[in-house]
Amino acid sequence: MEESEDLAERIARQALAGRGARYAGEVRALLDAALEVMRRRGTASRPRVADIVAASGLSNEAFYRHFRSKDALVAAILEDGAARLCGYLAHRMAKEPAPEDKVHRWVEGVLSQAMDEETAATTLAVMWNAQSVGEGFLSGPPSTAGLLAELLREPYGELGSENPELDASLAAHATMGRLADHLWRRTPPTGADVDHITRFCLRTVAPRGAYE
Image (cartoon, rainbow, N blue to C red; front, side):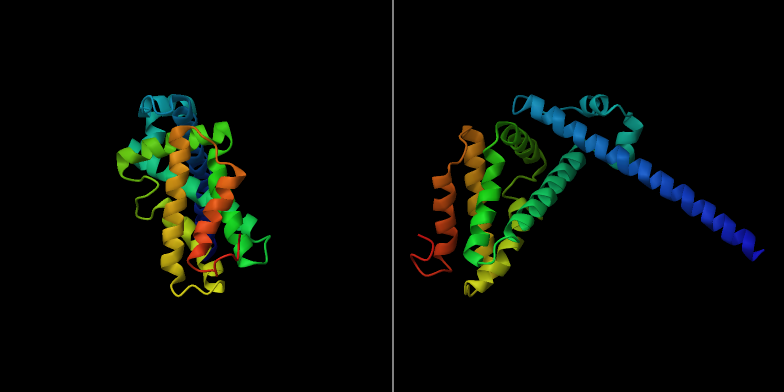
């Protein structure tokens, strides 16, 4: 009897594992489809659930199996994008031994979202759509800026900040605000912009002139 129960449990686990993989594929297809539809529409109009479902090749049933509304999908896109950006920035920062250079890499990576035309268009579209659900770049919880600020705590601590968490938060919100300005104005940041913002981010924690 025990062997039969073990077999039943194993078959059930296999079935659940297969369903989980299929559902994960559906979620990724919906996220990617929504992102593409948003990029195409830009700030002209917000996509409907029907538009996203059609682009994904799935059904309404599949959509509502994973998201209770379009707003929930937009929030998931924002979370997914923030996680990817954090991973990208962490990888860049890990290459630098000096905390000042880590901060520079962080600033450069954040502003790079507005340097490439296609990336900038996608980022702006997500930001614009996110405003409708109260999940913009400067709001939360947790906000994109708040998540990115966590990457600055360690280098700020190494630089002698008396309050690394607060300083990192202020720097992240200021940098993300500047990114939003570049996106809305369709003006890609220059190397001089990156250097200026880096100096600004370091000025409160590093001796003046340390990164001139």
